[in-house]
Length: 312
Image (cartoon, rainbow, N blue to C red; front, side, top):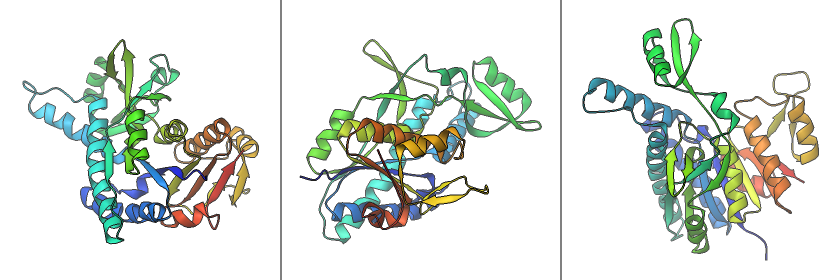
């Protein structure tokens, strides 16, 4: 029997940067997901939370500033959990509505997901993810006194910068698999999941953001999916974007992709994580594939009509 279990990773273009934009944009994502459900796929959805978690962190920091005696700044792990909840809320309602409009009765559930990271991950000593609002020099110095990292993006304008460690384990994976086995649509590990450090039986939130593409690959591996689908604003993967060797590809093998990674042919912030996560997944799971395609052409991409398919 063909494996119809699939992990779908939605990029930030699926949501926009405001509440209203998100409400409008999730309906497009819902149509793509409903197409896959209609095609008898068992679907796990994960998603970006970049603008949203930054917005929440900024709001909670400002709240603490206005009420300094009663409030403390919300940890990044809490901000991540809040973003998972409110993005999941919009997304699950949009998917449910789209399915019902097609006569498909299926529960859609959001799982607030904790993802284990290694406290000794080198990312903690080399933070790369910029978040939150601009700060003055004085505010930035105050952040550094708390042990946080800041970066001067423009002269006199500082922002906080945090670690992006690799995911090791997903604590709610059994619940996610149980929902899939019950033929439900599952939304999980939004924004890469809430990064946590295991301390005995206690899980301590880490001051970090996990790259969602790597967690998507872990989700696919742990749920037994054979397809990892990245939905973006582009129709296909482009090698050497903006250079004289720029090229869109339809199908590519892991070996060739690794060569391009080593040659620096992918933008580090946007494309490289998807490509690297695809290589890791396809290399680990026999008979698997990763597909990178346009959000509005998901079904066609899985049928080989568009998009880029990565195999071993």
